[in-house]
Image (cartoon, rainbow, N blue to C red):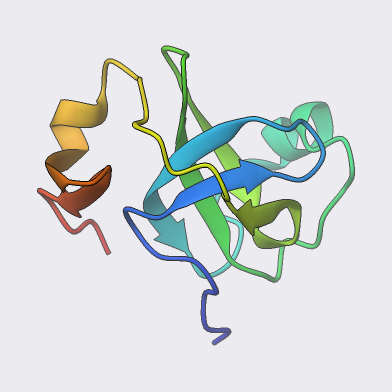
Amino acid sequence: MKQSHFYIGQIIQHKLFDYRGIIVDVDFKFSGTDDWYESVAHSRPSKDQPWYKVLVDNATHETYVAEQNLNISDELSAIHNPFMGLYFEKTGNNTYTPKIIKN
């Protein structure tokens, strides 16, 4: 099993689409459907790598992203997404502690 490079609560930046977000869950390999992958995964990243559920900053949704498409965000300002309170408690200095560990 491959180890994930990023962790729950980490603020990331998408390499291709340039949005920020925060990781809420990690799958050690792709666990979506083939239909979703064919319709959404534009760059066709490998399914055999960690994939992350990410709350998108300044949006109202979450997305599913392959590890190869993420970087650690240099911008560490607060994440604004209405679902933040479901997953995290803010612990100061724009750091977040998970409320629930899913894996």
